[in-house]
Image (cartoon, rainbow, N blue to C red):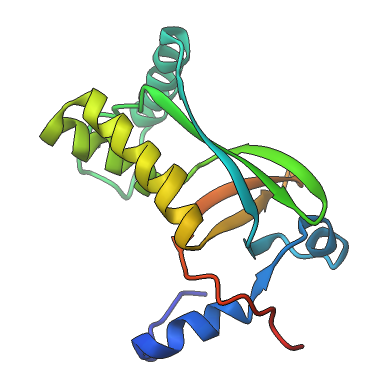
Length: 172
């Protein structure tokens, strides 16, 4: 099976399209047997935590071990792995209660690296707090949530989507 692009949604129809799929309870999604959700939650806090050097070293070693494995199909040299020195987390509230989760969204880490290269680490972290901790929650955002097959009751933040809160729940 593969993904195929079969068309485009006009910009003015994107928000209503996504808003029809938004949920406010991860437990209801789990009870319904679903493992992916676009969650509208109340964001209480965006946290930035410095990772321990030992964690970063462990990540690099794990990547190098995978990279050292023979691969019959990939003859290109992999780009060296540069783990992010920070974890980006959200404290948020759903209909199920208070939660906290680490954001697995590669775009947040890419934003950190890009802004750090351009403007320095201190400025990058300040701006990330402003954008992901203040601006997005104020204007409206969704958390793209998913579970792992080995841990079906643990929801992970796989992405952050900026989407205006139209104040309406989908009519089912």
